[in-house]
Image (cartoon, rainbow, N blue to C red; front, side, top):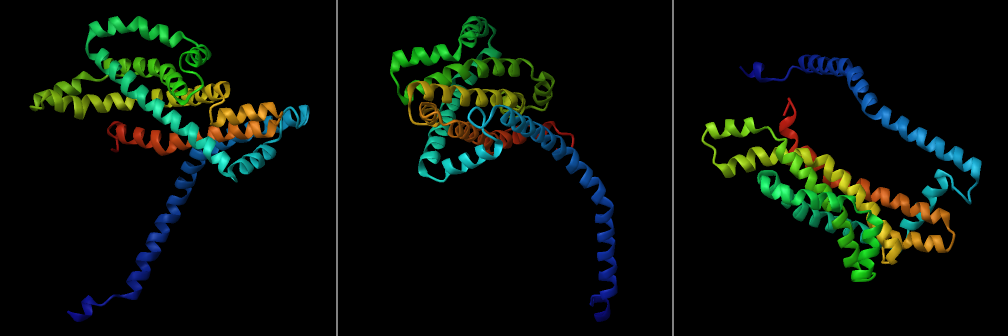
Length: 283
């Protein structure tokens, strides 16, 4: 009995060889999946950078700095507290305003999706607000509130709110009601059907809408900061424009893209993955 409990080195080595052989068989499949997942985006980035470099060579550094010059300027901006402060101010405004848009626009959209009368009343209002140019809101809020943080928050919220409203209404009306009927047949209450079935479908459908609102919110924030000269990436771009510093202007654009990617991958993507998990066949 003691002999049977001892480890057999030969058996262990045989199992290790089997596992290595399995991994060797899987490597081509894993490499193919990784190439298909990473390859096309890398090709797109390479083409974009190649076109950028070609335009730089054609028009010169004064009109369009090279990608390397922009990267160097971005690193320089992040090497001091001013660059981080500008990025943090813009990020905070976008997140706060987007949160207000989700609460107000999404809340009204949820209500309108379930109540036809409210949907009919708010539909023309949403269309009017959606058709208003963002530049017009920047000018109006400057007149109403002056160059302040509140003016920028209001501008972002009023521009992104109608998008989230319409997206939420479509998500509510486009949900699969058969799933709720199935839950009701098993005795689930109305609140449980909404929380466990309907809300998950709505949030999963809202993922792309929130991404669009986020990108638009960044554009509106930078434009409002540039016009009002309130601290942020827009104010830094206004300073770069006054000094004719094209390198620093593009560096602030790069910082805006970095901020957008940070929010998307740290906040939006995990939310989409969590709310859309039930839709995957293997989930």
